[in-house]
Length: 171
Ligand code: HEM
Image 1: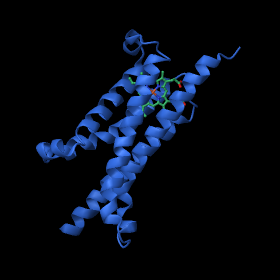
Image 2 (image 1 turned 90 degrees about the vertical axis):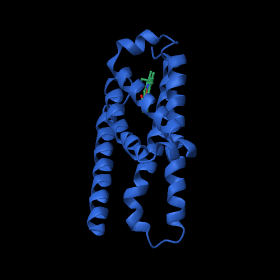
Image 3 (image 1 turned 60 degrees about the vertical axis):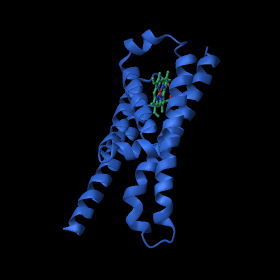
Image 4 (image 1 turned 120 degrees about the vertical axis):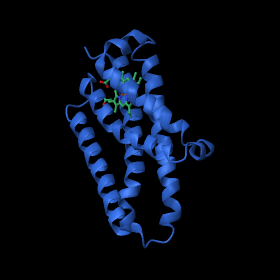
């Protein structure tokens, strides 16, 4: 018989985890799509806000997901996180999300200076960690890890190409 309590927990996992990933996708799409909107009035002013708030929302939902599932699915048993490799990947992603959230405060950004950019480049590694997390998650659809990994690769390539293109323009 299908256990309905598990079904509820899986739904919580699916909603919070997916919303976090959609917000992360939006925040990482802002920079590569900027050339398409460069003539649109207001885009340059709004893009920083869009990137920041979608990134903060991604971290918020990811941490909500981790906290809710720790209490429900894992019944507050930390040893399960230590035992299961797919949860190592989830926990590492949650740590990176926390670090990104703390370092999005204006004062911390000013204090970090150029180091901020390097730290925030770590956000691309989240796709790879979450792909590993989904690889082991017992109820995740079979296509979820490949889709997550694919999105991560496309976003990383888009970022690298935009960077190269900008540098060429300057040179
Ligand atoms: C310590 C941190 C984390 C813990 C304890 C945790 C725990 C879990 C658990 C118990 C599941 C349910 C298993 C399943 O659905 O098969 C799950 C699924 C999932 N997790 Fe996490 N997770 C963590 C971090 C993350 C992070 C940072 C993300 C990023 C967004 C994430 C995204 C997802 C997604 C998308 C699912 C798939 C749900 C599904 O479709 O079945 N998790 N997680």
